[in-house]
Length: 217
Length: 217
Image (cartoon, rainbow over all chains, first blue to last red; front, side, top):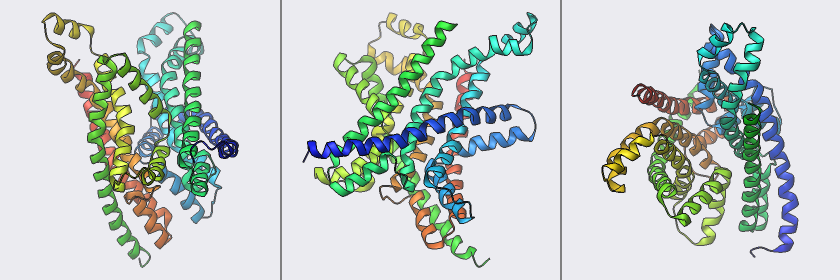
């Protein structure tokens, strides 16, 4: 039966419990990749073998599916004795993949600031730190927020793939409920709405942050 | 060496899976592109009703994970009584999902043309159809080609998700072999290598197009 109120009353708490895991995964991935992506981007823009390694890392993770990376981490690592829990494997794979994307976002932001900005700052006699703090970093941050917001939305959606290694996040919860109840419409409507809320919150947060920065400048 | 004999058969099996992945991606990219152009045109030139319908469609599709849409279709299609072979089912879902992203790419391409191009075409008394056909489209498509190719990379990677709803392609093939050989590392890395070859080739082509677009200005 469609929109069975008793069913929905039991379904919603279960889905929200799954959503909690989804949100945890997404926030952790975002926080870790914010730092990991920056490290990779800086390594990539340095000179020497480190740059080559970072470049190869970026290309490899961006050009292979997350699902395969997930399987390598989950099944591969357990085969050689570094068995991780489903949640930890999922988090690791999400960070490996999104770190590559974040690094590219940082690179784009750094490249978009023209060399003249550095020269102008130096010509004014700014110290290196002052130059970065007052001239370069604000411009980079303003440029990377829109792509970062998109990446965050994509991270939230990517967490659904962790269902493939039986982590009880929202997608997996939904699958279990569909299979045990055959109430397909209600379950998927619920899941779709919760994902839409989560991605909308992320997109709204990005916009607010963007606007606050615009005022600050 | 003995341990590698079954793996060699496995790798051959992977190549056959890769053929299926390519077939699926190539079949889906055609309707996705046409749908993307249609959505972009409706959003730019449609009446108010068409515009808000497109905006709603983009909001929903871009806010929900592809995996949710695929699983939903998998459970739902038998209930609705539509008799569609699974291959065409996932092609339809992939096309609907990517059409939303394609439309953004094409719209951005058209919007990033200088206003003077539109004004010049209009001042020559061109009809809208002629203006789009000989002034706007040729230039907008050239501008949109690099992000279009990145979406193709994303589409190839996304086909891996259909293995979760039971379709046979590269990822499914690799899982089957892993179940038989218990060599997750070798097999999944092999699958990753094949994905990488396909996607990196596309990505390099995209880079090439990007240089040409930038060089043309």
